Amino acid sequence: MRRTGTAGPVSLGTALALTGLAKRYGEVRAVDGVDLVIAPGEVVALLGPNGAGKSTTVDMILGLTEPDSGTVTVFGERPAGAVAGGRIGAMLQGGALLDDATVGETVALVAALHRDPLPVADALERAGVAELAGRRCSKLSGGQKQRVRFAVALVSDPDLLVLDEPTAAMDVATRREFWQSMREFTGTGRTVLFATHYLDEAESFADRVVLLRAGRIVADGSVAEVTALTAGRTIRAVVPGATEPQLLALPGASGVELRGDRISLSSKDSDATLRALLAAFPRARDIEVTALGLEEAFLNLTGGVVQ
View 1 (tube, helix red, strand yellow):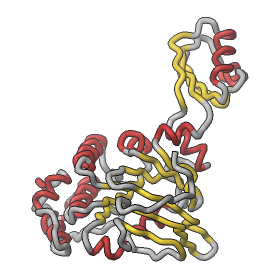
View 2 (spheres, rainbow, N blue to C red; view 1 turned 135 degrees about the vertical axis):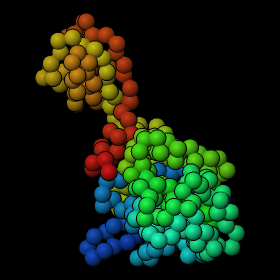
View 3 (cartoon, one colour; view 1 turned 180 degrees about the vertical axis):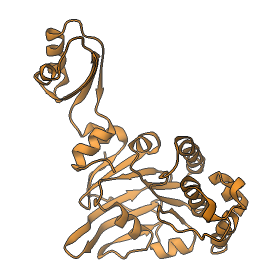
View 4 (cartoon, rainbow, N blue to C red; view 1 turned 30 degrees about the vertical axis):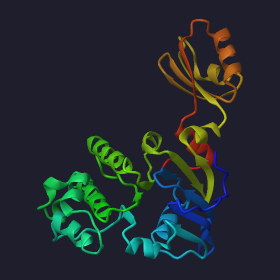
């Protein structure tokens, strides 16, 4: 588990380093002393409720906003230099596309800004939009626009890819295809930092999860390490005849969900809860005890709602 608030030594192998990063807007501390080091090849999910500082942090990484204090380096360079050199690719949810340009023209325009870009056809193929190359951007669906933004982010052949809610507006099948493309990208040793409100994406695709609250990092580690910070377990079972008040009265019980005879019981002391459950309901069966998931950890550690 990485220690919150300790950036550690920055080596030549560091992909991204944030040191003492801070940004205020009036009296609001949007980012309040963030220290973070990401190694080459890591896939890192950035999570937090609205107002946690995710977007401001991303803006400072991309050089769109200057920090009030602290530093950002990308492969040892300041953001402006890394962007100019094509080392950062960004997929921003609000990134505008030219309505009158075709998909192919849009990606080619961005490619022309870089010294050593991917062939446009390769970027379109990797993003899964090769068949849309001749279509005008004004004729794209929301999910298709996101895939085109992905092609735009890929065409510089970046070492670091920064994604802001990359699968917003995508249906389930398109989301699956997108993350398959991302696996192929990261399989080449590239580095990815993505902000998402789909916690299942963080669980499935991130090597590491960073939770922000009120501009500060409150947890940083693998999914297993972050969920372990939240004490408790979930007991799932079939318990004929049990009522919610009876289950909540069990020692250690902190929450319950009932669906017919099937229960999902949150507990701060699963051993005590389970012993009492079996004593009170000897017909209980199909019992499963699991650690709390990332969603529960998110809610407990950030004090927010899933965004």
